[in-house]
Amino acid sequence: MSTPKRKTSSLNIHHVIYRGINKQQIFVDSDDYGKFLTVLRKYQPICGYKILAYCLMSNHIHLVIKTGEMPLGRIFQHVIPSFVYWYNKKYERVGSLFQARFKSRPIGNTNQLLTVIRYVHQNPVKAAICKHPGQYGYSSFKGYFANDLIDASYIRSFISPDDFNHFNCDKKDKKNKKDKIAPKEEFCIDIEDEQPRMNDKRAMEIMVRLSGCGNISEFQALDAALRDKALQGMRMAGISINQASRITGISHGVIKKAAAS
Image (cartoon, rainbow, N blue to C red; front, side, top):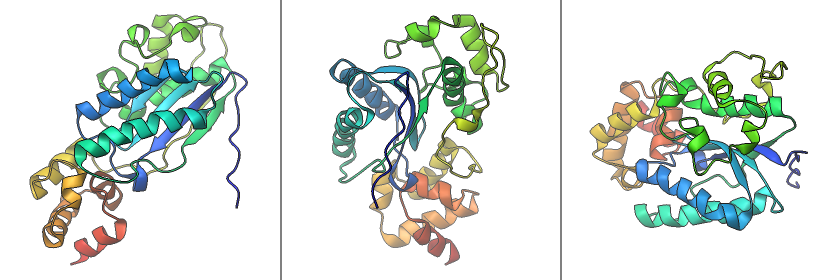
């Protein structure tokens, strides 16, 4: 069965989601988040793209990207391997970190663009990590118009910084400066995970306390008996099977079996 062709945008702007393989955690500490942003900066002049918004969540990445001559697929053939090479060396691991094919959706007008950017910036709020998008340190919202990775010139051409900030903090659809209703978020894409019972930061703290491991690689290297005991404790602490799999990289089947024993 052939891979379906990606839809293109007349504005060359797309909302992109890259997810960790098996929905597992990508970013373990602040250095990991920072390195990914450094890689995006490195390849901007090489690949000719512009970043209009981003949000790095623990197990997936949201980007709003405007391409030049190089198509999306080729851009990520540069960006993703560069980051994964660094990540695998740091954590002494091998193999893939991201799922093979990223999700993308074209953005056809400025109203859609505003709504998608708001949706991206609201992701940490939706995940109950924070109450305001400005409280999250790994998205482009805070300091948007002074962020050296963000090309804010296009956004500034049709909405003021104050209106943009207010719009991104409001979950309700409002009129923009030109009095056009921004569309609903039904065309936005997400990772389609179930809502976690607790945020991943708290779940990671529980995993570290129960296992003594500081990251996914250490947890996966545990003796099976110690691993299963930690998984049992995580389930008893209220961590869902999906969330436990995300933060440990352990399959659903192994977690279910450990919890049942």
